Length: 299
Ligand SMILES: O=c1[nH]c(=O)c2[nH]c(=O)[nH]c2[nH]1
Image 1 (cartoon, helix red, strand yellow):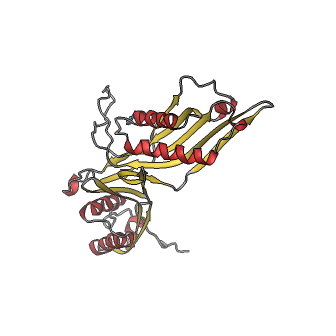
Image 2 (cartoon, rainbow, N blue to C red):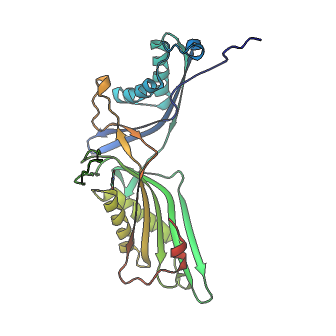
Image 3 (cartoon, helix red, strand yellow):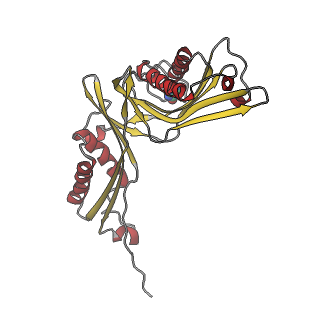
């Protein structure tokens, strides 16, 4: 009974690539997930462990980042074709390359109706939430938003933190700041007994959160968090308290120096975990004590 190697392919799956092109103050953002898979004469590595024909998956990932720097990405079809053709043309053993790209769309955050130069939001995955608790004589309402994904490619710094023997993070005065906002706000008084326009509140609070994120020059995500909560309390007198849970979706600068390329804050690796998790509350001084809906509204 004979056994032989069947069809096979290999590559790097889900390379998270974010690029920022700066035309003066206006930034152009691209956010892609790129997967490569190569096929060809790869029997040796499977059968004997001879890797002489194996272009590493690490090199495939590096190629994605280097190509993103060397030429404008353009349409994802063109970028995928450039990558695929490169692998087939340069690797003798490789006869086929499959490159799959998903592009994640971002919209400019409107600030007073004007699209912002370098602050973006992504509506995919967002939901509006509410938790109400009803007793015989009153009700408490907690509303919120989940998964409101935002990113700014300018106006964010993080430095002047303490350095102990385990601190390796570089200080930066220009980084990408990205998060998926989970927000909960509680209404003061007995809102179910009064005439609250829930839809309008939701819309205005969402807009206020976005505008604060876009316009606040950030020295930390903590500072941005408080500014966002404070802005909601300033805009909506019926809201007593705002809780925010903000994952710091890290974007790491890709080191392109091994390929003789400079990276002036243009090409990033979007990491999904671990992430910093920044949580906090902005509360109105004269607000009444929170009701049961607040205690139960876990972030
Ligand atoms: O805005 C930030 N706050 C932190 O507390 C922190 N910690 C870290 O590693 N990066 C950041 N960024």
